[in-house]
Image (cartoon, rainbow, N blue to C red):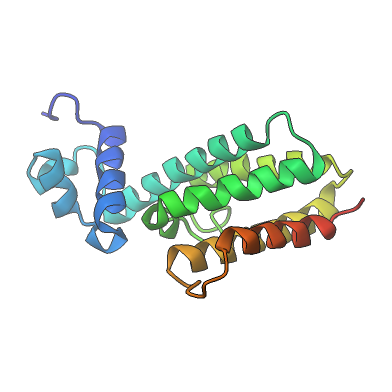
Length: 186
């Protein structure tokens, strides 16, 4: 019988807390079970495998990123919305660098259906922001790729300690945002 209060969502939450605290390399079913206060075999009542757990975690991470991004862009338009989206995305990665590594680079094609749905939710935030520039279809896809590449690259470098020079990283990020928004139709 499953432990009271333990379900797949709770197991995912325990695993996310573990990764936040100790990094993605600490993720194992044994470590999650220990943190949840159960024997490792008990997790199989809720999670099929470590790969399944990682997929469920990625889904939850993508949903969180979509919520944070949508909230940041809400009520804003054009350059202001892009800047808010880029800042929220980067802030999320910096707050949860271990989580971010668990999301496949192309979750639309390299994960189960719930992961693709969650990725589409995040993608729709980007598309909604870019509609403010009149961008749809292929033009919106190209612009989304530019925005995502810029914020992803910067955030991963910053989270990994890749900016060791003395100049202000925030000033550099502001310049990157200006570069991205300059690439959009005005």
